[in-house]
View 1 (cartoon, one colour):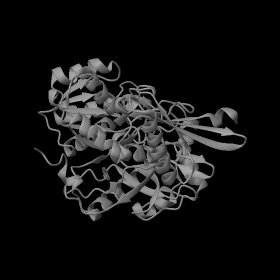
View 2 (tube, helix red, strand yellow):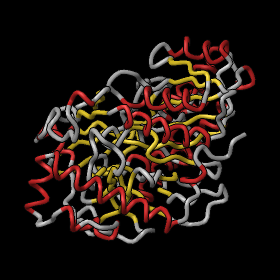
View 3 (cartoon, one colour):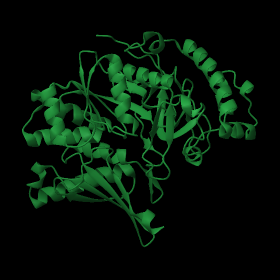
View 4 (cartoon, helix red, strand yellow):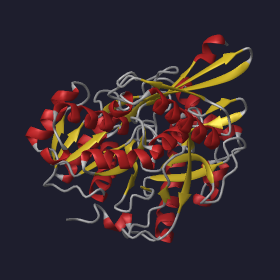
Length: 436
């Protein structure tokens, strides 16, 4: 089994990587300045010229790119090559405004395949494996990213996409799928449906999976591993940066290695924009240094995370990004307290006496924020006595109130009450927005 897909890059020393990054950064900045008017205008306004960016140490001089910049230049205003060089378009969902449209040249697609091939190899996949892709295809980057990376590794790809969960499980069983890619919440749904169908983890050949596209906790990882009998790895990416494969977990399952030869990463204070030292929690910022069609400069992801550069037992020297705590735009401010859905998920799965499905209902009553957490009962709990259910509700409330620092009401709901989705789970319903 190959330990690395590209050992020379994945195991390069920090000094070697910084030298390569500096060269690629200076080239990218000059190309973007010359070919992308909005970037040129922002750099001119900041008093920065391409010749001012000689190394990674000069990165802080460049202005940030925000999601709004991408929307303001919809659809092709930030492309750095003529459209005849663009061979593929992808886009975000556009649920909160205009879609983010990104383009790829032939070389960009090769870079993307390379990044995903590294992730798959780090997860233990080889050309002898069967990859079951349950990410959506189409404008969403998830399906195509993993699909093309798996083909580059030489895996047999099963492009199932989303939908028809029972059929998916039959395909996993009959086709001999050994690796699974989907959102972590859908992986749990697959496991739940398998149980209903009378299929156990011993009836399938799955041994590993790469899960991403939504925040998930260590506790959810254990649920997935226990129920599917696999090793569950994290994979990270954004449509705006390239798609899945920006960062990936290795065998340690302790943070995701960032493909630093293609992306420079920073953490910043989300309020001030100040660059923070590695090891500090902050907003993750990426700069693309090899993309041709759509290179973003200092793109603010809104993901909250921590970077760590330490010796890894896998041998890779690529900096690690710890599992993001959440997104600044997912964070809820309830009675002045910052609340992330992942905090609640962690508590519920640690307690282990409910099903792993929940939903946060936020409202405002008499000018005061309210938080109701609907927690789905497991079939076993549903048959418990009223006294037992009341005790469980009190236990959950005490643990969550202690974690969040605010009081929340807990409502236990019947099994299968909370909707199952094939893509990203809907964790929050914020009714306050309707009243603004």
